Image (cartoon, rainbow, N blue to C red):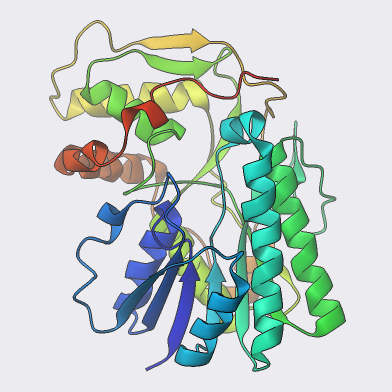
Length: 338
């Protein structure tokens, strides 16, 4: 059985990827330091799986990472260990420097110390390309990050490329659009709005809600990551996009409509409430994913309407998920210190 490591495998995308890889008959070694957004609930049914093991380890602990590599001898690594919330990066950029830049550096150094061939898929974001008023950014588009978060991810991407060229590390960078789906920490837009609808609260939308994001169901992302791992070219970058852009205010309207279609009892408090905008808030992200379509034959399968409805159902059927997360971590507004 082929063995792979998933770093950050207790988080949102990571936990979904762990489950997907297990279904595809991989032995999965999950490495996660269990920061605030990681959640053991995401992995509750996996601990008895003989093809799964977990280590609570920070990527900055290079010695432990090397020890795991030597013990399990994996063929590949999917690196999803990262701080990801832009608002938190505005309040505490230091945490993002340590996790996203130094964590990636120490992972690369651990691979070098391991001295055996291993393929690394480094999972990044569309935010590294910066604000895009029109058109779509392809893989040759210049990086122009504007937040501490996107800057830290851009730095990590550059480190990966440098280690590929200088040290011949077998690595690929992927840049994906906004994900949604099961197990997402409720500080992010879609789970936060769903939580508020379920609990009859106002729906906070930054500024006038005109900021546009490209949306993809996490299952589509997981399928793309495995395909890049199996067929992608070392040293290359691949945009993973859906082509489905929507303004934040329209996401809120869709979720209210979905709730009503499910005959959910919601009161007058469930309405859009415009709040102070994020400092330096990028207006629009949009990816050109022609490369992954033409070279690897990948495209999304789950439509936005179906995906949002399925996601809403998951949160309705997993209300215990919210109870496992401290409300103070996602109720209070962040990112206003600038």
